Length: 215
Ligand SMILES: NC(=O)c1ccc[n+]([C@@H]2O[C@H](COP(=O)([O-])OP(=O)(O)OC[C@H]3O[C@@H](n4cnc5c(N)ncnc54)[C@H](OP(=O)(O)O)[C@@H]3O)[C@@H](O)[C@H]2O)c1
Image (cartoon, rainbow, N blue to C red; front, side, top):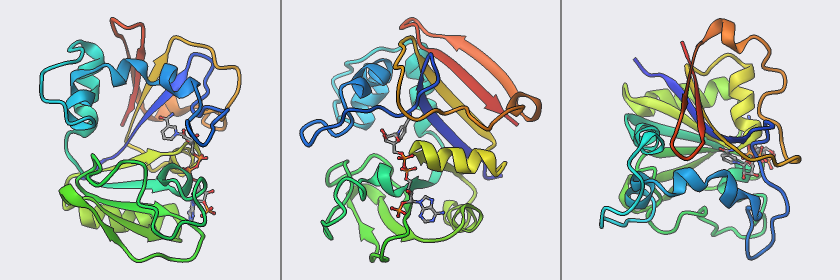
């Protein structure tokens, strides 16, 4: 049965977005600190960087990173995560991930801006643009996933919309042992999530706390 999954990075103080982005570094300098343990994994080297030399960590962070890629048949993301807010005037914008994005599935980008035609990319990713409810885009993504899972990739407001609507079966949060003190909060308005989902916690060698909510 298709499950709806989210993997998110958060700081110890609960922030899941970073600030201070520039044209040269759109994610801001804190993004590297928030995601450092994941970016150090062998799975990230292989799946995102295309580095097949065997470089990267192989511990608890890596096992979660590998699970992140496993069994996903379709992806949903918000306009900001795709980059439409950073490049609103570029009709040819194809996302941050280069010619061969790491998804390898249909990716549904939620946006209120004028509909764009689908963008097929190398490696099996096709970006589709939808202006609809979280329930309706999830129904379409579930159909496309053909029995595999659907991942809500982010950003923070899109992930929170799916969580608030009670649509998420598996939430995995990688809590980096850092304090950001600013940004968008992940946990607000989610009181009682531990009552509907089973919570597990694991601490990786890097100090990252992997908290998983599953139902
Ligand atoms: N911590 C993590 O793991 C993680 C992961 C990914 C991203 N991020 C961070 O998240 C931030 C981006 O997230 P965000 O919260 O700003 O934005 P987002 O969730 O990526 O996108 C939100 C936008 O998507 C569009 N949208 C959302 N729901 C829609 C619907 N039902 N129908 C039509 N359009 C809809 C709207 O854009 P329009 O109205 O403009 O079309 C909305 O403003 C970045 O800072 C990024 O670094 C964090």
